[in-house]
Length: 570
Image (cartoon, rainbow, N blue to C red; front, side):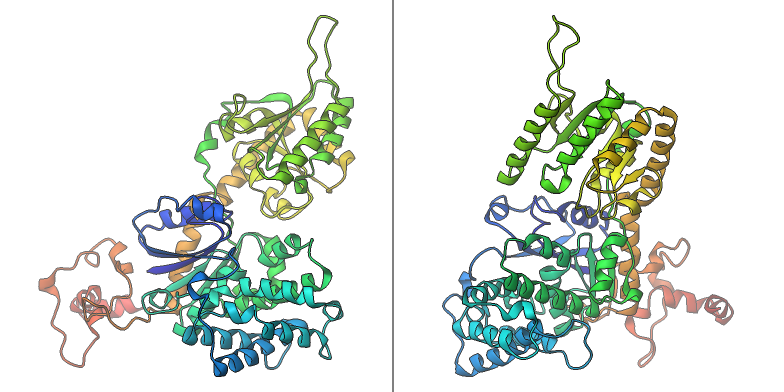
């Protein structure tokens, strides 16, 4: 099959949240061809270029979402008629954003406006100039003041309208791309969006224009991400952007043939946004387990008195609560140590938060010395992955006997799964998909509760047999549910299932008149005469008989006689 993989801010760039699992998916499903359609999120990402791609990737098309305008269409302006059409469709979309519910019955102004703008962009060029025009701002202002508008948006002022127009231009920029042709998304057999939101928008248009089925995979729900990312915006802007994201998510879920959330936490968000339960199928993200094999098999027991935290330095990880909890642990277990091992902090926010954590650790745990002649030592250490103490990620988990996760906001806890691969007992806060991932193989406490976190850590530090049992159970669960192999097997089956309900729509090829739904028919994998028919045994098909593509293994089966054919049919 030919898959159109739609990404936003990740693969095929070497940075981004979706880059790892998309790369594993493309490399693991080598029998399929992939066309990559990627939206970039920053100049730094584009400056690093594309990652090395396997040969099954046929083409890559990219488009920026971080620029202020599309330079290729900067000078193109709509005529009077096109501007009137734009105003009508944009008014429908803006009115639906300001009023109503994503799941309200009756005619949907959002979808009418969205697809109307898409058709306008396809026929007359990019929408960027019109979406940032005075006309668009006035339409937004009128929609916010219209009867029935949400109370939060009625207070919007001109700066808010300008900010919303800018956000909508970026969010709707995929409508203006040159990806919707017979040589692009019109030629694929299946569109697979690696996330919701803007990444899935080209998939919506591929289905609208060409009937290409859409598969949506979300390991982090875009609506939730928008809520968290827009906290610095004014209330009207935040409300309008959230309404746009909800309406877009509802349309994506309605048009998708299948939706594969990465966990139950994401599934609940999707259902709240109107996703049909019959379309939802949980597919856990696949992670490589080989590099943790030695630790998981017991080659590295770890210090029985050491707690380990592994992750990114950011406020959502709540290291402040972890440090306060460790102060209580030290009172109960004076020999306990805490090692905080993270990737290098690069963003200003991460650097500031790390400095704050270091200062708090120095205040809570002044350097201690065994006697008057010894050098003081702090029981809390801040380390980086790749440093002398933890040159590899597996070495970080091998450093202690208990792995701690103290987050207040978490999607799918990758570090927790890695600790499970290593056979480590874990103490985690109940946030995101933590309980679903742990499944009873670790201790879970409420977030922002240092006392409960400390009590759970002390319980495991004092009970080595319990640590061993929980670690073994956690490793078995991780190997069963969270490996790359199970993820690839799930998507391999989903691709075939979707294609069985949506056969290849291309009616001819350039080099042959025969229809070929798949390069390798399913019969080719069955041992026996089906797998390798000879040309001499294939009867010539008379005019008006079976189609030409049925002259392969099916003809061999029919030649065996009516009795065997009836047996095969039963």
